[in-house]
Amino acid sequence: MIQFHDFGIDIQTYTDRGKGNDDFPDVNQCPHCPSRRPLHRHGYYQRYALTAEGEYHLWIARYRCQECRKTVSVLPSFLLPYVQYTRPVIWQAVKTWLETPRRGAKTKQVGFPTKEVILFYVRRFLRNLSRLHHAAARRLSRPIIFSPKSPV
Ligand SMILES: [Zn+2]
Image: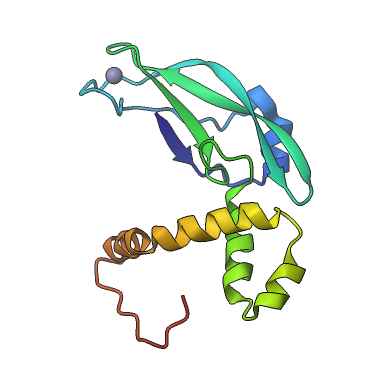
């Protein structure tokens, strides 16, 4: 299972700190079982991340529950599970794509990530729009009303 943590630092700082990052959080409750014992640090694994500035090799901390023996990985909040592009890169690409009005302009806009990758995330974003809407409304504890002219 994956949990997210906002380390409050950029990807370069996170990469530079490596395994010596003093800010790896404690995981105090197992998400797999009712145990209330803190999870033990259980090593690291390496993964890649891509931004317009380059490729990064990051260490991800892994924890293990002493009761059920299952593991939890703590991803920095700028990453998405199983995706090499960082969350800000994907969000910016999707946002730019949706804000670009004409078809011809969109084909000229393609740079990073590739057009195929952007389209994959645009479709995924649009498919999950109602779920995102409900999640945002829950966070705000009130309904969000879109008028017909609201940009999406
Ligand atoms: Zn457990």
